[in-house]
Image 1 (cartoon, rainbow, N blue to C red):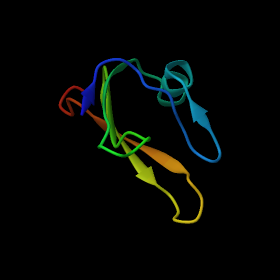
Image 2 (image 1 turned 180 degrees about the horizontal axis):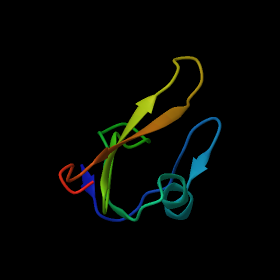
Image 3 (image 1 turned 30 degrees about the horizontal axis):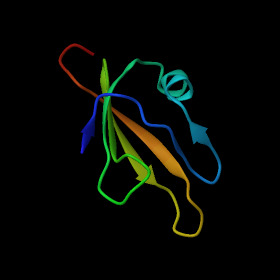
Amino acid sequence: MILTEWKDFGTDAEYYTQFSFEQEVNDQFEAMSVQEGKDIPNLIWTKQYVVVIKNNTRLINDVTFIKFPRNPSVS
């Protein structure tokens, strides 16, 4: 499901609000993709990037943000 309004989510180590996410990736939120039955989005779109949310471990709930430019020819 694609959401155009921010939905807060958390891991065992961190709780992400729209403000904290934008501070971490240094860009403005536009949309997010959340799979059914999951609390953490798998993709987040910002003005300049597509951010892939990758799970780090199996035992604890932690994620890494991987940023890809939305328009690589401009970057």
